[in-house]
Length: 461
Image 1 (cartoon, helix red, strand yellow):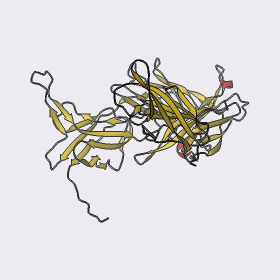
Image 2 (image 1 turned 90 degrees about the horizontal axis):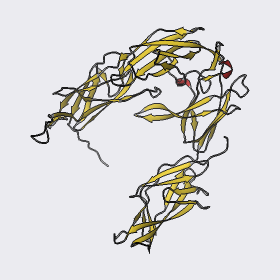
Image 3 (image 1 turned 180 degrees about the horizontal axis):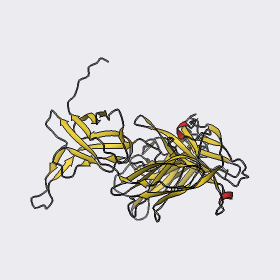
Image 4 (image 1 turned 60 degrees about the vertical axis):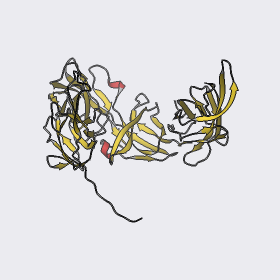
């Protein structure tokens, strides 16, 4: 398991981008056989030094080669094209180029490449040295029988906000070591997931398990230490998990629609963190599982038509938990009122007439304004974004956003004519603050003001 593996660099090359120098020859059946030469270099993206012995494959063309000591490669592919088409460029079609070299992360883009008859433009492919996060998870009292599953999260920025997205997992080896390789440079957080002690699974015996832990040895994801790695660097981190008593948890669910799935997220109260787990038993309509002593929050979402959500706080105090009941309530519909203050007299709301007089279809009201809600919470396993639709039966400028689950949302307005001059809800400026939706609570209508005026900017260069 510790042996090194090939890292695959991928690049999609479209027919309009990748062509080759051709040599014409007469084949059977009145066809011309064209030999296309594809060449280039593979370089280290950090040092700009050539990468030798990198395997270059043109999939679908039965062509492969290694780069030489100068990082150069050349592939010759025989294509057959009908004669008399006057073509002077040979398109390779939609071909996938793979570059394999241990110690480098995948490369999925390739600069534009053009080859013409009689001259050749070199294709330069840059591979980035891999970053690695390695380390050890200490399991006190274990002799290698407990292997801990580690989860890596990567920091991403979007809309000016920080978000943490799951990257990959790794189960420790028998000696407790773990290794995340082929990583891009960036900022990461490392957690361990719950793991049951296999020696405590005897029926009737006290259950023991290892709760989630966040590097460096904290129990709150928001307080976890970021791990920053650059291209070619290796970061080493260590954690020590603790064995704790776990107690059965059974929480009845009320108002659960028949035949629906139930998505769950559980975490210590006030510390929204991944890694904890409970399950849902549809036959008994109960949330079940086991947890150690502490105060917890469980969030539930029943997706489907007329989506429903529920939130419950509960405590575990050295004994099994029976109840209280988690009640599911319908997710609210948010109303949107649009006011157009246009100087042009145009409108984003139009009525489309039937194509022909004999058409049985009725005239349709169409909106070219869309209000989009983007969920801010990136840790939720059932996070979803929502968009507006024309209010049913509306003859004016009303929109609705159905099934908006509890949480915080960034609000964005896209419009065919004009721009959003103001977006508010209950007096709150949604162009600078998030929309907050509570569980089963009504939401003040979103008021959108559109304008099509302009301004002049003067200056000197």
